[in-house]
Figure: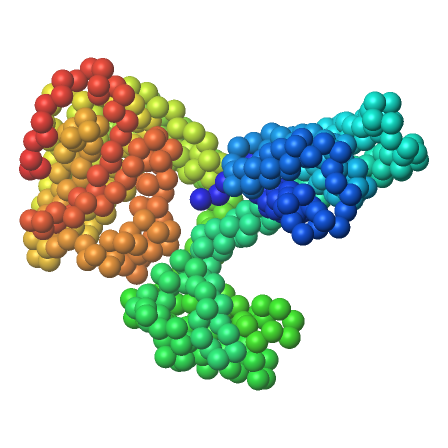
Length: 546
C-alpha cells in the first residue's frame, strides 16, 4: 500500500534517531573505557608509577562511582529519549571528570584531554545550542577547578593550561556540532529521497500493473522476468506456469529473435490462444546495451474499439447533417397532409390513411430529433409517465402503423400503474427498435412471431419493461456483441439499432440489457429509475414472466 505524504515525512526522523543511537552506543563504550582507565590508575600497577592522589579516599570514591555510572549508561544507553541519555552522560562525565582532575593532579592533564572527546560527542548528539552549552559548562568546570586548586590548595599550575583546554573544548564542540547538524540533515534528506523513490517505484509498478496493454520483461535467454496483469489475461493458459517464452509462446519467441538479430518487426496480429483476443507485439530494449527486452502486447479488440469510436464520431456528425436535410422534406410532407385533411374531396376511408401518414411523420420527426440529440450528446427531457398506459398506447400505435398479419404484439403488467421518470419520446424509440427486432428475428421458422411487452417491478423495486419473444433465442457468442455498434447478423441491417437504443436508455439514467430465458426465446430488459415507483406504488413481490 502506498504511504501518504504525512507518513512518509515521519520516516526519516525515526531512522536518523536510530543512527544517532548507534553513535551514542560508541560514546557509552568510550565512557566505560575512561572509567576503567581511572580505576587502573588508582588500583592497578600504574598507581605506583605516578604521584599519589591529593585526596585518596575521595579519588577512589569518584573512580568507583564513575565506573558504576558508566556501566549503568552502557547497559541502558539504547533505552529512553536520546537527548536525555546524552545530557545525563555528559553531566556525569563533567562532574566526575572535574573531580578526578582535582583529586588526582598527576593525571589531570590526561583526564582533561580525554574529556575533550566527551564534549565533542555530546555536541555531535545534541542540538547546536545544547552542545555549545555543554562546552561552556566544561570550560567553566576546568577554569573553576584551576582557581580552586590555586586559591585553596596552593597549587603552582599556570592559567595557560586550562585556557588552552577551554579553547579546545569550544572549538571541538563547535566543529562537531556543525558536523552533527550536517550529518543529520544529510541523513534526513537521504531518507526522504529514499522514501520518495520507493513511493515512485510503487506508483510505477502500480501503473504498469494496471495498464490495459500487456507488458513482459524478458532476459537474454527468453525467460520471463516480470509480467503485468494485462499480459496474464491476454496470454491466458498459454503463459500459465511457464517462465520460458519459447515454451509458453513459440511464435512470440520467434518474432523476438528475429527482431534482436535482424531488427525485423512483424506487426501482424498474433493469436496466443483460441479463447483469447489477438495481440500485436512490440519490442524495445530495457536499457541501451542491455539484453533485457520489454514486450508490449496490444489487444486488437482495444484497437478495434478505438477505430469504432472514431467511426462513430464521424457517423454522429454525418447523422446530424443528414437529419437536418431530412427535416425539410419531412416538414413539407406534414404540411401537405394537413392541407389534404382540410379538403372536402377526400373520402372517409382515405382520411384514415392521411392520419397514419401524419402520425408516422410526427414519429419520424421525433426520431430525427433523437438522432440530433444523440449526435450532440444532449440530455433527455424526462417526465413522470405511467409505464402501463405508455406500453399499451405504444402497442396500439405500432399495430396501426405496422400491419402484423398473423404476428401478435401484446402488453401486460403485474400492477395497474407503474410510474417512472423517463423521456417518453426516447422510450418510444427504444421500444420501436426492440419490437421491430423481436418481430423480425424472434420467430421460429414457419410460425408467427409472438411478442409481449411486460411491465413489472424487480426485487430492487425498480420499474422494468421486458420485450419478450418466443423465438429460438440468441447464442451466447452473439449475445456478448449485441450492443456493439455496426454488429449485425443480417445482411440488410446497419448494426446501429441496439447501440442507439442503449445510448438513449443511458441518457435517461436507465439500462438496457439482454436477459437469457431458460424456457427459450429472448428478453430485452429496460430498467428505469425507481424514484417515482417508491413514492407512488406499493411494493409487491415480482410476478412471473408471462
